[in-house]
Structure formats: C-alpha cells, structure tokens
Length: 330
Ligand SMILES: [Zn+2]
Image (cartoon, rainbow, N blue to C red):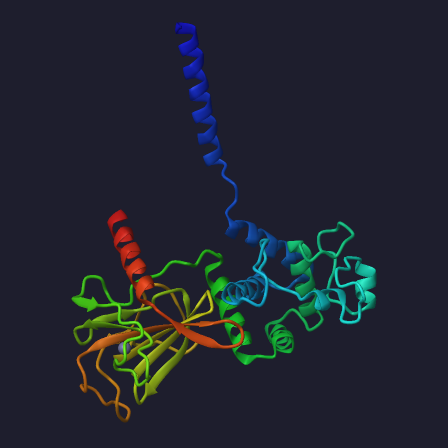
C-alpha cells in the first residue's frame, strides 16, 4: 500500500509538474502567430508588416460581419474568391498549380514553398496579397493606390490605413482593450434604451445609450483607434467619431467641448480624455442647454459595404466591469 501511494503521488507530482512546464513554455498566442506571419511576409515582400496587419484585420472583421462570405479558418482573414485566385477564365476554379494560375491571370501564388498555390495556406494567401501590392510599390502612397484599385472604396482604404498607423505606433496586434466612456469616479447613470422612440439625437429610433452625468464630466476614448470625425451637427451638437481596430465607429454626441489639442486623424487609446459631457445641439453651432447634460454614445459597424448601428448597452456594461476589475488589480 505504501509503495502504491508513493508511486501514486510521484505520478501525481510529475503530472502536475509537466502541466506547469507546459504553461511556462505555452503555445504562442494567435497574435504572436500572426505577427510572426506578417514579419515573415515583410522580409520577402518588403511591404511593412503593419500594412499587412491592417488589411488582414480589416478583412477578418468584414468576414465576421457578413453572411455571404465564408468565415476565416486559418490565421489570416484575407478572402479571395476562387475565380480571383485561380483566374477568371480558368476552367478549374480549385486549381492550385501556380503555373496554370499565372497563365489564367489568377492572384494565387505559392508562398510557403510546397509547390502549390493553396487558398487554405496562410502563407500563400498573404503572399498573394503582398505580391499584388508589390506591383504598385512598397511606400505609403503606392500601397494606398494598390488598396484603392483593389477595394474601390474610400472608406475601406481609410479604415485599413488607420489600422496600419495604429499597429505601427504600438508595435503589437493585441489592442482589444476598452474603457467606459465617462470616468467611473463620476456620478453617472444609464439605462438600456435601445430602440426607444425618442432621445436627443434627431433620429427616429434612438441609436445609442444616453449616459447622464454632470456638465463637464470627462469623456474618454473607449478603444484604440483614430479620430475620424470632430465637429458640430445640428442635432448631435459637438461630436466626436472614433474608428477602432475592429471596424467599429464610436460616436460621442452633445459634448461640452473637445479635449485640448485633440485632432482629426489622431491615434487614441482607451481612457484618453477626448471631451466633456454637455448638452450641446438642437440649433446653430454653440447651442446648448435645451435638454439635461448627457453623453449620447452610439456604435456602428462597417462590413465593407455599409455601416449600421448596434446596441452599445451590453458593451458598456462589460467595459465598466472590466475597468473596475483592472482598477482593483492595481
Ligand atoms: Zn441619445
């Protein structure tokens, strides 16, 4: 019995040690694997990794938001239609022979060196996009031209370029952290009013959540992103639009004003001061006080074709909880 117990505990110990060991030398995260892929592509194509990351992330987000294209399965989110890959006149749309694909003017190439141009290979797919961009050039303006010719949509190009700037600045891909839009230390209240008949915003359906707080309470950026819009609107008053790393547009309205030095095109991060709670709107620029001060916060998703609003309330609750937990951990 004693021997049995010794053997048993030794086994138990070795099992727990090996699990511990595994946790120490854990598998690289999805972000690390992607970064490794982008860096490898940069070294062969000279297209800076952050452009590749921006394109890849844009397409991944579009595929998550759309039902007419298959979901991404591998590391990369870039999607080629079979006819784009194999060539429009190629009788074999599942062709993976780089030579016949080239003959039919398909975009498919062999990036991983296995002799095949495979739509299911991350390297092949990313290499194909890099080769396409390379035919324009490797500098910012030529990459932008290549993107425009490929997507033929200004908004798509500006979203991708914005992401590239953000990735370049932070040097990493994991930028999913969020912050609650007003300071958690302030007195604020909000309810789930999604779809309510009326708020203060000038649309038929209330597209957002109203966060009531005192005049001047700090309003903060909710995500890593770029300031895409800043200005006056008759209904929304002083407003800010922030485009995040996941194709979402965060909309802040009725502000008392903007943070000093906040500029269009500026990169912001969660928690950064961007303005103050106010009651601006419903009149010519500067009109204020026609309703109680509150922040109108809305969120819109771009799917590569159009943009639509979705209910921010569950996200606000989540970000509020996460921020509390982070504050506690400090
Ligand atoms: Zn509102």
